[in-house]
Image (cartoon, rainbow, N blue to C red; front, side, top):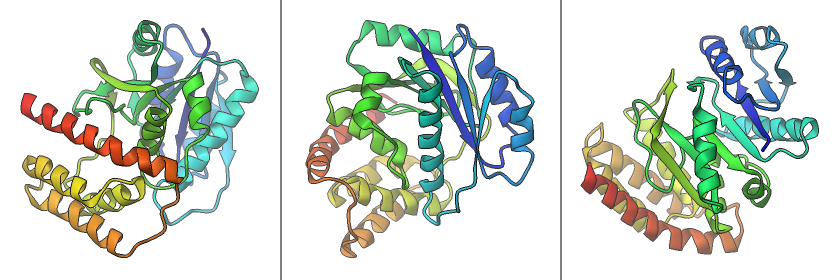
Length: 276
């Protein structure tokens, strides 16, 4: 079993040292650890270069106006680099530049992959967040190599992480998070800012969720801050984007699957809300 680790960050001098040191302390350690510096203007690259155990990949991509595009570009470059270094890796641990993992994080998740050969993407959960069933936390995901080969790459754009999870399920893989495996996120964001809800609504259009689905999800989110307003804003952003009939970038096969997946996801979220 060979696993590799990947982190990408831009202007992460506040947090990235703790992330790096936690990865280097994992037991067992990764075969290779690539850290991508996405054209930082602070001391991020300098901090990364202090660690001889790390392969630093520096990028100079132009900044794209769409959220998520640059990060997807950076991560794809990192996967290519790490695959050159370790062509026969079995698992990819993707860690955000503000996540701090316990020493046994990968080892415990790897046990779940051994138990379930259909498990394609998995994660633990941050201490202060809940992750829905059938999802995996963005901050510290593990991809099985065969699943990654089906996904092929992160599609540049907002919510590219969510898209990758849906694509994994489209290929028959199981995606799951395990709340008993905790890790720390040094910087967490919640949807208190309405701009986040707008972004979520627009993203759901491009991910292929129907408008009715977002309306029902908004009801599920009614008790989340800001109460009622957040979910309504998400629904309205989705509705207006759909009225604009912007071009959807993915394949017809993907969108057919997304419609079916939407029903399953709604039932799961209602179930989770009932339990909490």
